[in-house]
Image 1 (cartoon, rainbow, N blue to C red):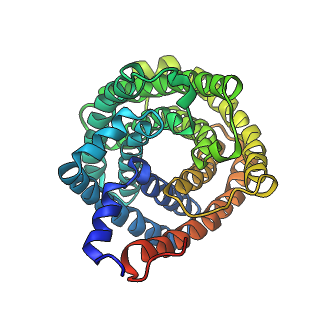
Image 2 (image 1 turned 30 degrees about the vertical axis):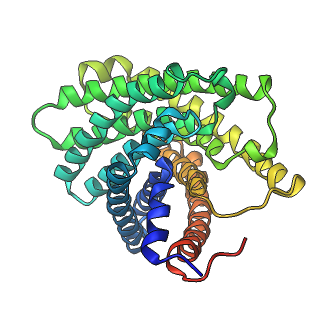
Length: 351
C-alpha cells in the first residue's frame, strides 16, 4: 500500500538537496540568453519558470530548515553536499539580473542584498563546517564539482552589482568596488577549487559513478567569470574599474578560451560514464548543473562578443544557446516525470 501524499511530500522535503537552486540558475540564464537574442516570448516563459522555481524552492527550504533541522545541518557538515548551498546565492542573483532587464531595478537591488548577505555568511560558514571542521580525513577525497559553485556565487554578485550600477544615482562607486572585489575573489576561489579537485582526481580512486553532473560547473565557473568580467568592462568609469578594466578584459578572453577547451572534455567524460561504463542516466537534481553551464557559456559569449568586439565569439554563443535550451527542456521534462512519480502518483515508482 502506498504512502499518503503528505508523507511522500515530507520525505521529499527532508531529502531535498541544497543544490536544487541550480534549477533557478539554469532557467534564469536561459531566459537572459533568449532576451539578448530577441526571443521575448520564450524569454518571459523561462522567467516565469525561474521565478516560480525560486519561490517554491525557497518555501521548501524554509520548511526543511524548520521541520528537519537535523538533515539540514548534516548537509552543512558534508563536504560532498555543503557547497550546493551556494546555488541559492547564484540563483537569487540570476533572477535579480533578469528582472532588472525588465526594468525592475529595485527587485534586482533587493535580491542582490539578500544574495550578498548569504554569500558573505556561507563563504565563511560552509568551508569551516564542511572542510576545516570536518573530523573525517582526508577531506580532499570528498572534493567534487559542487565546490566550483563557491566561485560561481561570487561572480553572480559581480554581475548583479554591475547590472544596477548604471541605473542608480547614489552608491555607484560602492557597487563598482563590490563588482571588482567579488570578481577577484571568484577568480582566486576558482583557481583554488580547481587545484583541490584536480588533486582529488589524481590521488584517489575515481570511478564513473563519481563523475556526477556538477563537474560541468568547472566550465560554468569559467563562463560566469567571463560574463562578470564583460559586465565590469561595460561599467562607467570609477577608480576601481578604471584601474582594472584592461586586465579584466584580457583575462575574460583567456577564461573563455579555456571554457571552450573544457567543453569537449566534459562531453567525452559523459560519454565514458554513460556509454562506455554503462552508468544509467536517470533524473537527479544535479542535472541542472549541466544546463546552467551550457546556458552561461552562451550568455558569456554574447556579452564578450559585444564588450570586446569579437563577433565570432558572439555567433558561436548564439548557436550554443539553442543547444542549452534543448538540454534544459529535456531535463525539465524528466523532472516533471520524477516529481509526479515520487510525490503525486499513488502507486510506488518502479525500482
